[in-house]
Amino acid sequence: MKYVVIIFLLSNTVWSQNLDAHLWENRVIVISADKANIQKAESQFNLLNKEKEKLIDRRLVIYKCIEKTCVFYDFKQVEKMSKTNKNPEGFSITLIGLDGGKKYKSNQIEQANVFFDLIDKMPMRRQELKNKKGKND
Image 1 (spheres, rainbow, N blue to C red):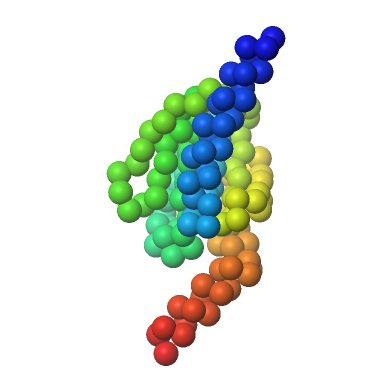
Image 2: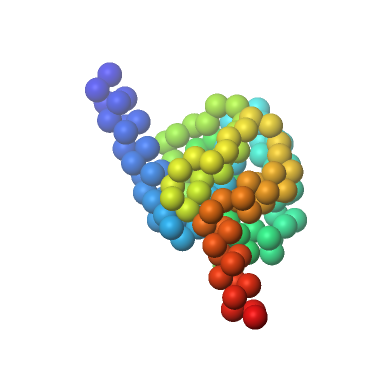
């Protein structure tokens, strides 16, 4: 039993380190699915992928995790694949803010505007827009 707990903690630590790399740099969307929900994950990713410019503008990156494989997309370079010991159950999509806090989670496929609207209401995003507007004036 101790070994199971240690393996679980190690896999969470590795996953946590991946997300920690984005702290204060990027907002993160995590799409996760088990084998039975691969189609949902692909549909969700495709909805978001159509909005690359808006994703980049909002400093959003995506981790698409199906079973024990995660693929990282930042829309600036070639995607990166990594393995994890975590095996997701069902389907979920989670938005993580610049501060590392969970901002939204759903078990349904969501339109990209759900995330963009949430982000655009966040204080840090409003400041980003204000700063961007000041540079253009």
